[in-house]
Image 1 (cartoon, rainbow, N blue to C red):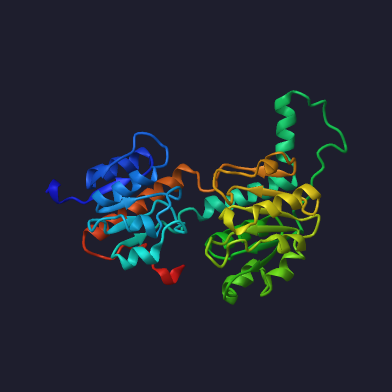
Image 2: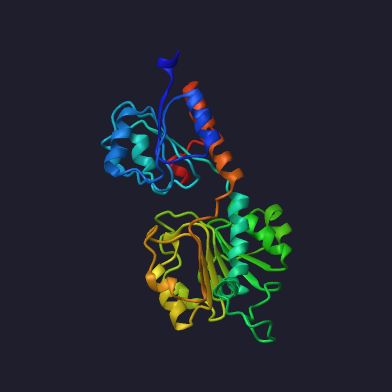
Length: 328
């Protein structure tokens, strides 16, 4: 019966087919505008919903969870990253947390390669000249970038996305190196011809390109700090399609301005939308508005996973993409 359907509150606009399917299955509150929910509205939603469907723009900390009533039983995150959700506190309060892993792997890896090419081949500089109407024609020394074939790529975080980046980079002729909490199994490592570095410092100091592909956890906050950024070769570039908090953004800006780092390609930022204004002014930096997972196909798959997690929970079973504190 309709009265027995789970009450679901969605915090952001989702693709229309996803919203329509949710409307068919649940008693769902959808958003008319696409602005993030204010904290007080988020707290109110958590008091009236059985299920909350937040996104990475929502911070659900212990204080906010303390304002949730007894009704809330599941936080079904639209996205893989749950670093803004206090999963441990949620579990203590009897609230399950699910996410959408694996959906954005290929999309994010594609964007990583796009950033590597954009920085090393100076694509934004070329675009700017064409859009300004100031191009005077081809010249032998104009817009000289660097060939990526043969370059050493150091991948920081060799999970699903890191491995997908490695496969693409191999096809471009790059040499694959990586640092990870655990070394990959030989059957995974060998096809990639990947070299494992137990010491992140040693890897960083020898790479031509660093790709950040690890999640944000307390142990990875500012993993690329001022000291490690100074270890990079002056000719090296760094790209980040993972989480902005992994890089000390102010230290990165200083390194780029002083010429200690050759370039950077960033899709994520340490303080969300508050980007260091000096970073915007640099010609050797490519900045994107968190587009790594922004494909129609990816967003639809995310929505499908959210619906499956809620439906499985509604049927009295464990959501297939349940997040537990030990995973983090």
